[in-house]
Structures are given as structure tokens and as C-alpha cells.
Image (cartoon, rainbow, N blue to C red):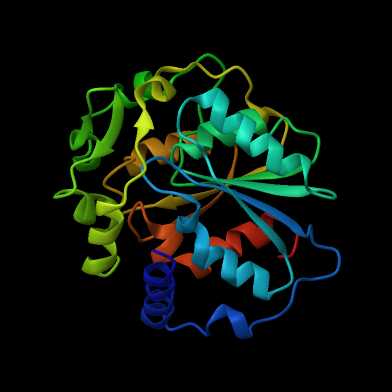
Length: 256
């Protein structure tokens, strides 16, 4: 998976006409150096490989959380463990489902700012299931399937176009075949903490998203008073537009 995602990063930077980030300016001395990346449902921490490579090359200390996806509490605990290992102020970043996770784990005193990437940003007491029911189901949501134990995946035939439509087809197919199921109980768990009330927030809104509706993303971004960057990309923009996502994380670190 890592090789495929790095290939996607190279392709996306070429399509955008930008210089590969590995050759760009190093991290400013006053910028927050610690970055913790939290992955969403159906994928694992390698979904952040492109962004992590860019930031690491600039001198940031980057850690990616491996969520068990067994419950909201378990994912928050995994994120807290990584945060506790940081040696100072940290930017906490969440993609998709992980927006719920960073809202809770962001209460950690080491967290200086939050970055939401195509992510849910619930308020206290809200659930993903209830929020998703407020609007029409997207192609990605319609394709979610439960197994006999209540774990959810996205129909592999739909996954490449609905989740990763701007990645090479073989990357989308690989991701579809190697999904990380998430327990349905995670989506039904009500949030208890909403760190965005107290921490400055940034939001990467993906305008071609077929999983989390862009209108819902705009609602979340406005509600949390985030600094918004709109990317013309899919739900997998953390890979297809890694350079742009990394730039927003740098802004949250105080480098821009």
C-alpha cells in the first residue's frame, strides 16, 4: 500500500504542476514541530504516507496513529497514547471519521491546533449516524455494507470511484481490497468532548467528495469557525492532493 500511495503523491504533484515538497523550504524555527495524523474509517495509517513524507522532509516530527476502529473510545485512546509521547505542542490532524476522534482527543493539553480533512466535526452529544441522516446519502455512504459481526466496509466495486476517484484506478482498487472494517458502534457513539470549542481549527474541504457531502463539510467548517481551504478533490485528497493538505497542516503549525 505504501508504494501505491507514494506513487499517487508523485502523480498528484505532477498534475498540479508543483515542485515536489521534498525539495521545498525547511520548517521555520518557530513553527510547532510535532504533527500527529489520525486516519479515518476503511483505511489505515498508511493513508497519510504522502503527507507524512512531505512534512518529515521539511523537519517536522510526524507520527501516524493506528486506529483499531473498534469503537470511538478505542480510537481516542490510541490517539491519546501517541499524543502523550510527543515532547511539546502538537498539531492534531484527522481525516473523515477521525474528525470525531480528534474532537475528543484534542482536549489533550499538548494539542495546540486541530486540522480537519474531509472530516466530521460533531458537537457534544452528536453521533456520526445522526449527522449522516440529515442529508441525502452520498454514493459512498450508500455502498457501506455490514458483515455478520456488525463491522462496516464499502462495496469494493464502488470504493474506487466513490472514495478515490482522483487517484489512479489501481490505487483505488488496492485500497478497496485492503479495507479496514470499522465497528458500527463507532458511528453510533455520542461525542463527550469537543476540543474545537477551545482550540484553533483548520479545515480542508474537498469539493468533489462522494463520501462526506461537501455541503456537510462546509457546515462543519463554519460551525467550528475553521480557516478553510477548498481542494477540488475526492475523499482521498489526503493522498491525491497531499501537497495542499500538508500546506494547511503547516499553517496550523504556525509556519505560514
